[in-house]
Length: 296
Image 1 (spheres, rainbow, N blue to C red):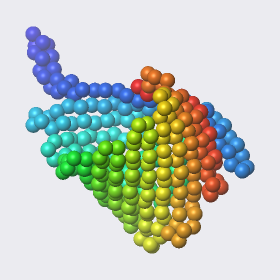
Image 2 (cartoon, rainbow, N blue to C red; image 1 turned 180 degrees about the vertical axis):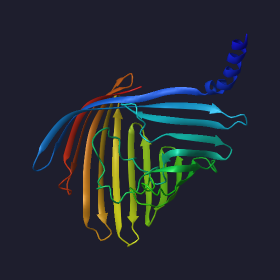
Image 3 (cartoon, rainbow, N blue to C red; image 1 turned 180 degrees about the horizontal axis):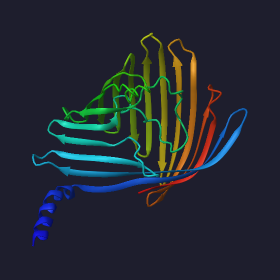
Image 4 (cartoon, helix red, strand yellow; image 1 turned 30 degrees about the vertical axis):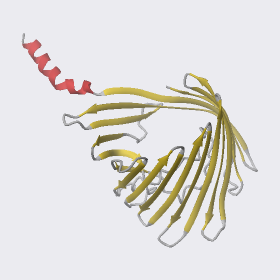
């Protein structure tokens, strides 16, 4: 009898854990990749698998709580875990969420493997944030998001590539019909970024444009511009993008063009072929990839 009572008491404590709805999703991607420079050509087959455990629940006072745990194929988390609380105040996300600039980035990148981005990675602070607040909608189609990451004395803020600095940012978006506009501003230590993204979609055609500028404390400015297009015809989607970086004086830093075709086989299975080439950075190889991805 004592064992039965003890079991009932223990069940009362663990019962709330079963109140959340849990989901599992992810993808597994295989590709054959060829990379070539003026000097060498390398080929390899690669497998990329990841999955996400998601959960949703509700507090006693009606707040919606959700979260995600992102895992790599070897079972280790990739650092992208988060918990979100939503209510009349909007939505607050803790842990790892897109920062202000990262929230407007990627509109011109529909590619699965090849790198469409024209950058050496040193001037773009497109990173995640530790705390974000999506404000409640003030008007139809309008969205506002605030982002913050505190400095980390050991490894630097998530935004700063190892620099000990704070990140502050704001993003404002507006959408009507098939047109979308997003603008963002962000400061990471002594660096600042401003950017805009425009998107338009109609009857299988998707167009995107993004532009941003990074400025350091020394007044050095780098301008980034990218535009892209996708066109879906039945199960086939064609993709194109071009991205370029220049200094404020007009000197070219990078210029990358990427093309691709994706074929939806149904059931979450997509076959693809992609190619990207760089015209200015001699050390960045031209890349061709073919493969298949399964989303579940």
